[in-house]
Length: 517
Image 1: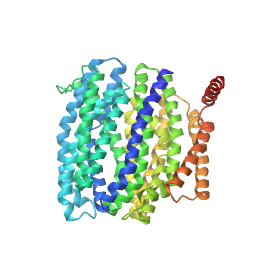
Image 2: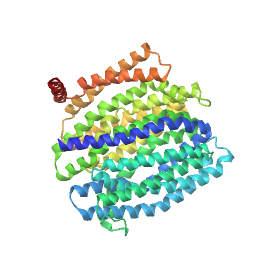
Image 3: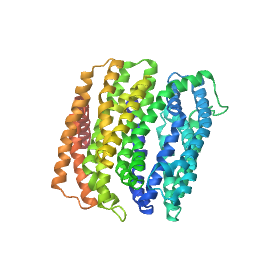
Image 4: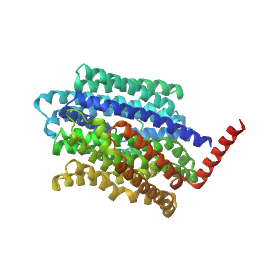
C-alpha cells in the first residue's frame, strides 16, 4: 500500500508540474503569437524543431543513462551508478561538438529547405540556430542529474526545479518580447532557464546521492558497450518519436509554407502538451517497474502494468475525446485576434481533432512500451517506432501532395500510421514476453475503454448541440458538465469492482464519522 501511495504521490507531483506548464502555455501562446507575425512564428517553431532534432546526437545515451541509474540502484551497486553518470557525462560533452557543427550547417541551409523565408531573416536563422543547439547540451546534462533524483523517487525536487525554470523562462519571454527582441529574446529566455536547471539539478542530485561525481569522464569499454547497447535502440525510438511528433511541422514548412506552420502548431500545441500527462504515468512507474524486473518479480511487474493502464484510460480518454469535440470552440476563444482569423481557427481545429484521435491508442501503448523497455526489449520498440515513423512520413506526403488535403493531410498521416503499425503489434508482443493472456488484456482494458469512449463521445456531441458556447463562461460550464458525466462513466466502466467497493466503504466511513460528530 505504501508503494502505491508513493507512486500516486509522485504521479500527482509530475502532473502538477506539467499542469503549471500547460497553464503558462495557455496564457503565453496568444501573447507570443500576437507579438510575432505568421512568418516569424513559423520560423521560431521550425528552429525549435531542428534544435530538438540535434538532441538526437546523444545516440540514445540519455535514456540509457536514466535506465541504468535506476537499474543499479535496484541492485544496490554504487559503482555502477557512479560509472554510468561519468560515462554519460563524457559522451554528452563529446557529442556537443557534433551538435554545434550540425547546427551551423542547418542554420545556413534553413532558407533553402523551407518556403517563404525572406532574405531579411537569413542572418537571424543562420546565427540563432547554432545558439539554440548549444542550449541542447545544457538540457541533456541537466537530464543526467534529474535522472539521479527520479531514480531515488524524488520527483518532488525534480519537478520543483522544473517549475522554477519555467517561471524564469516565462518572465524572460514576456520581458524580451515586450522590449522588441523578437526571436533573439525567445532563444535567450530558453538558454537562461536551462542553465538554471542544470545548476539546480546538480546541486540537488549531489545532496540526495552523496558522493556524486561528474569527473573525471569515464570511457571504459564495458560502460560504453552497456550504454550504447541499450542506447542505440533507444536512439532509434527517439528518432521515431521526433519524426512522428515534430516532422509534421517540417513537412508543412517545406511543402506548404513557413506561415502555415503557425496554424498547424496551434492545432497541435494542446495535444502535445497534454500527451506528457499520459507518458508521465509510465515515467513515474518506471523506476519501480525497473526495480521489480531487476529482482525477477514478474507478477508484480504485471500488477504495475495494469495499474498504469487503468490510470491512463481514466484520464486519457477524457482528455483526447474532449480535445477532439471541443477543438473549434476552444481555439476560437483562445486564439481569435488580429492576424489569426476564423479561417486560421478552422484549420487549427481540424489539426487538433485529428491529432487527438491519433493519441487514443497511446493510452495502452505507452504503458506496454515502458514495461518492454524495463525488460530490455528496446530492439522491438525501436523497430516498431521507426516503422511507424516511416509510414507516417510517407502517408503525410501522400495525403498532401497527391490528395491535396493540406494541413489535415499532414495530421492524418500520424493517425493512420499509428493505427496500422503499433495498435496491435505492441500488446501482442508484450503478451508473449510476459506470458499473460491477450484475451484478458482485451476484455479488461480495450473493451471497457472503447465502451467508455463511445459513451463519452455521445455525451460531448449532445452537449455541443444543445448548449451553444459563445464565451469562456459557457465553455467552462459545459466542459465541467462533461467532466462530471465522465467521472460516472469511468467509475462504472473502467474502475474494477473492488475499487468501487473500496470507494463506497470509504465514503460510508466518512459519513459515519461526520454523523457521530
